[in-house]
Image (cartoon, rainbow, N blue to C red; front, side, top):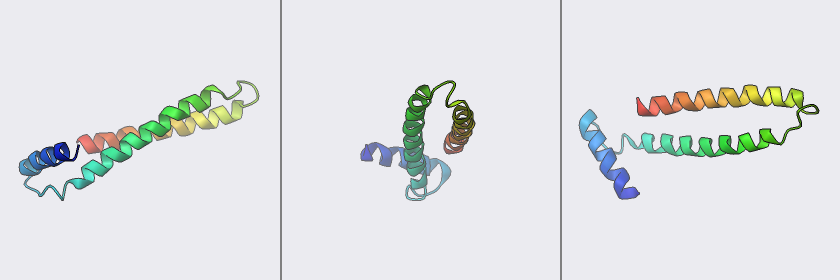
Length: 82
């Protein structure tokens, strides 16, 4: 993994005329993206077990927050790929 990271960062660095160390933030961004996706994956399971009637208000807030988190994560992913 580290060798792949170094070689890919090296290629990218050559393309944009920067050092591979300057582009290390991309690796960290993708690590954060992967971590956030794992958290959101488990959030779907949490929502599944909320009671339809008893937890209606909680589900509404949860849906709003989860949608916001998904949009923010997709925006971050777009920036990392951009």
